[in-house]
Length: 333
Ligand code: AHM
Ligand code: MG
Image (cartoon, rainbow, N blue to C red; front, top):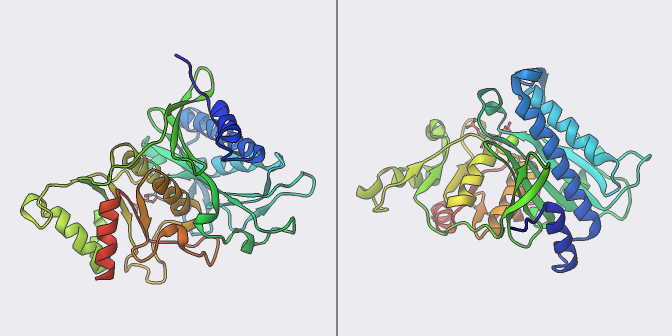
């Protein structure tokens, strides 16, 4: 059987589909290579002293794990010198990083959550990397924070890697969603699923139920109805899953449908949710929409949200279309 590698896939996207420019192809390949290096480090675990805290905090005041820091460094180093980027921004760095003058610069901006699902690192549960590529609208001028503050509709590529039983890379360049599996012996990403689609209906939901008392009424009403199962207004039983790694929860939804919610809650009233718009919500929403699903903050399509700052947070409701639309209608009621 002939196997399609990521390189072949991207060349094809460049040549026939004309979906990407050669510079974007190279950029995606560099990110994918960095994800391989992260996978190697994740896989070493305790053997190489990779587990545990780094003893530092990130800009959001969260304790950084050693692997958060290592993954961030791997992505930064891999992408700095390629000549395709104007700048980078990371969930783990306080401010954006402009490509230094000693390297050529390009027109793209790369944003990433280097290791998503940090609470799962030390317990050997799936974790991942999420990335988003924006086309800079600045005409070769210096990069500022404002350069990054574009809505998710400006993304030209987005993807995530999952470091689980197998290492996967899920990617969109706006022509559907495609999944590659890492062949560890060969060191190559092999296309294993093209055009992933999320079923419109589902019987599975994902939310951290321990926050229920803090939710706003529309989400409370929606989940209450799911919990009533066959006897309730929905007339069917629902199943619940919560990995607590967004990459793993979203990957399950891309594989068999479902709805994922990390809604705004009353714990910190000035924070509109836990997840970050630029590093988590936007790339995942682009992928989910490309797979036929929907993504909203309850009031607005996530990809249309205009960011006010780099580390902006957002309420996230995404997955099977009909369920996402139902939650939206409860917000409007
Ligand atoms: P992280 O980027 O610090 O790892 O946090 C994001 C994670 C998501 O992957 C996951 O959906 C969520 O936070 C889990 O939160 P909680 O621990 O509140 O259930
Ligand atoms: Mg994260």
